[in-house]
Image 1 (tube, rainbow, N blue to C red):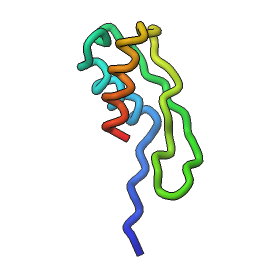
Image 2 (spheres, rainbow, N blue to C red):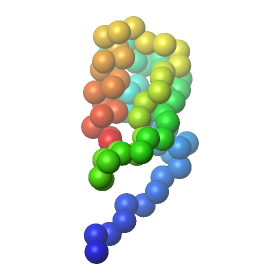
Image 3 (cartoon, rainbow, N blue to C red):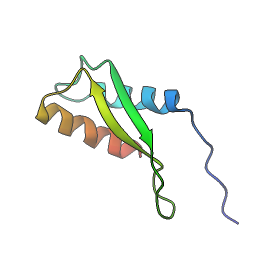
Length: 72
């Protein structure tokens, strides 16, 4: 039987997403990343990004999503 992945708290995941996103161009002023639970089929990620605070310009948002996708 495969080993189950350890569960992380929402606060932990949001903090890790914030760290990753802040490193990206145009995202250094980011204060918060909000995530929400999903119900994936199979073994996919069980959370998604709901938004950023403050809102990011479109290009910076793209960079932030790319950085966070690497965490997922």
